[in-house]
Length: 130
Picture 1 (tube, helix red, strand yellow):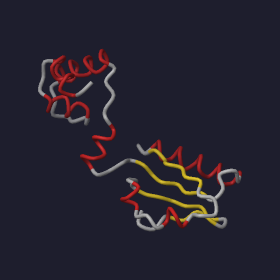
Picture 2 (picture 1 turned 30 degrees about the horizontal axis):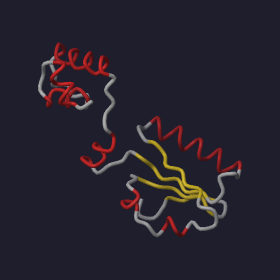
Picture 3 (picture 1 turned 120 degrees about the vertical axis):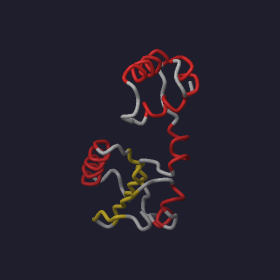
Picture 4 (picture 1 turned 90 degrees about the vertical axis):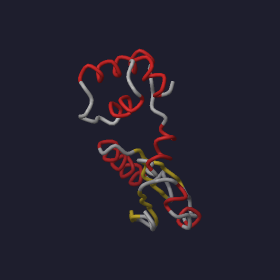
């Protein structure tokens, strides 16, 4: 389902659908209601990949750990994920083992995340380039 189809179902422009999806205040309440009803009726889900390409933001945070089986790591990652979700982010968790360098050499933009943290030798640090 595309926003073009939602616009046709609601009898509004694609721009109006976009404004509703982005919570713009400039949409008339009646049009907002039509769009929301069309979204619910069609079970519309936004295309996150298209949004990421358009905005150059992924809303993802990369978390690298050298050993996810470490109970301390698991607890910290759980906390990072909870805070990330509260702020509209998801995490991408990578268990690097001893080879954390294979991830560290890739710039943040190559992995399409907005930030990153890594756990190595007992401490979490903000990843370079994130």
